Image (cartoon, rainbow, N blue to C red; front, side, top):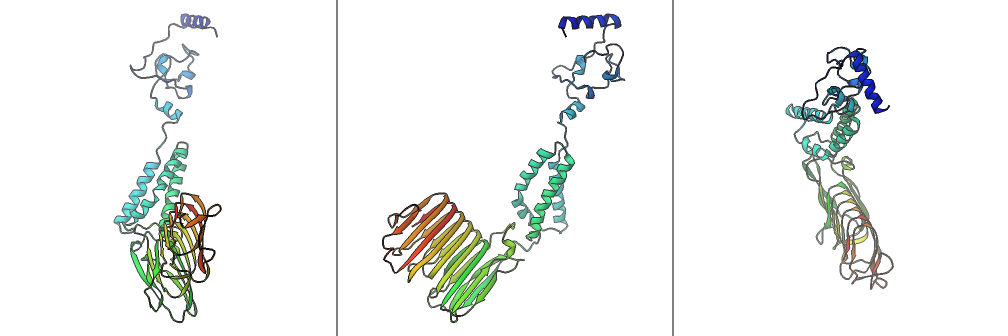
Amino acid sequence: MDHNRGEAGVQARGAETGPLPQLDAPPAGQPTTYVPPEVRPEVRPDGQPGTSYTGYSGPGAGMPPPPSQWVHNDRRARAHAGHGRMPVFGPVLLIAAGTIFLLNNLGVLPWSVWGALGKLWPLILIAIGIDLIVGRRNPLLSGLILLAVLAAGVGFLYANGSFDESIGTAASALLDLPLGSTTSAEVRLELGTGALTVGSLGAGADKLAQGTLQYYSGQDTPSRDVSLGERSSLVVKQSKSFDFFNFHSGSAPRWDVNLNRTVPLDLTVDSGTGSVTLNLENLRLTSLMLDAGTGNAAINLPTTFQGGNVPVNINGGTGNLKLTVPAGVEARISVDHGIGDVQVDKSRFRPQGEDIYVSDGYNTAAGKVDIKIDHGVGNVVVK
């Protein structure tokens, strides 16, 4: 519509109906925002309360809204724009924390549960994200989802015994296996979570294995499967409760195992989360298999290898690996590595092909070791 023509129409209407009432302007310093018709204040153009502007048929009907209806901070306008949603995350978190404190005071839950809850802090980030995505549109649904996330975390804690006050303190079991008629042995150690150290017994010891196996009180002691004879077998496993989740606030269990130094040994170590230290210098090793998950590993190989090629296979996940091959031991080393540095003592082990290193006397040695390293993330040092 032409601007001049529109002004003429307005003047003509004003002449017929009289001048429109002048409504008050917004307060000084306040910005104005247009309010859609469906949320306009219930006010007539003449400034009197009553029929809304859209339903008014008196003077000024059909005219654009006067400036006084371009209002600021109207509650319904903010709600229409979607900025007045109900907060969800804060109240749910306060209710959950208050409930746990109440159960602490009543003696239903131990205070030590807060140490386990501290390990669930990533759930707070998840809850905030859910609240930002869902809470604006459906606060009730957002609250239900947040409660479900918190309930899942509490379920994990309960399944792992974190509501038991006795759990989290260390207990120890002794490992004491006689040598008997053993002339060779197979030893397997499976530690899901914790630190493992393997060494050797003193010369002349009449034991096949001795050591200390830590575990959390309230949980099962590590299992031991023993078969004694000329070819003896020992399998030690940690309780299944720790295979997947460990929410306890105490330090991780520690195993110290010492093996007979005169008996030829096939040694297998399966470690999940934690450090591994294998001091094998004095052992008669016929094979070594290390499957490490997360944590650093340090391995000192025996000073002598008697007869044939002794296989050493090391599979590492995440963590640094340090392998020491004593002087005088001939070896062939193959490295398959992901992320991190690989450092091999090239003065002893000459590069031959891609990621293969061989000592000078390997081909003619009567006893030697074949080392295969498959490592994921972390540095590998061979010296």
